[in-house]
Length: 175
Image 1 (cartoon, rainbow, N blue to C red):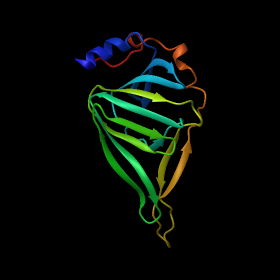
Image 2: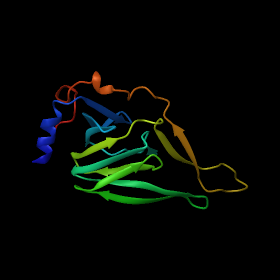
Image 3: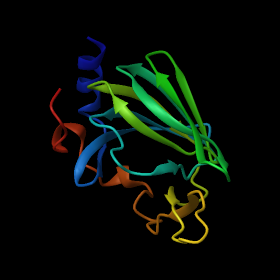
Image 4: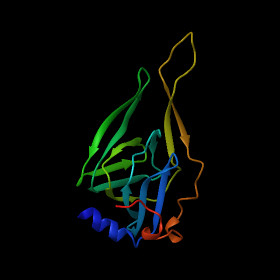
């Protein structure tokens, strides 16, 4: 019932379809700004796929799961002996997922039609992705090393909602 209501409400909001590996995985609906925060409804239609752990360009953001749910891999730290140490978290309806600028995570799996209320502070940097790079040295095998790759695109997210189609006209996934 809630999913149908959110789908209907989002039809009249500016919509941005976000893709990974040439397939949609997130629908972002702009709600507005309040007290220095920007608010969206997010509808997950897939997981992050095989993308690397990523950080966010905001100092602080949070997602309140409204329906559905998802599994998230989150980096705890980089261990020089073993590589990445991560934890898996289950985000269910009613749970608040806080993501700080220093957090790296990846959405591993989503329940169909997962909806979140998402809010973030102003952008302070570009998106970044953390990959494991295995050094190629036959004489001295070493554990994987982290490689951070920033997103070169710094302008596409700036007030995208001003020219975005409404949800009902955006070619979004059916409910």
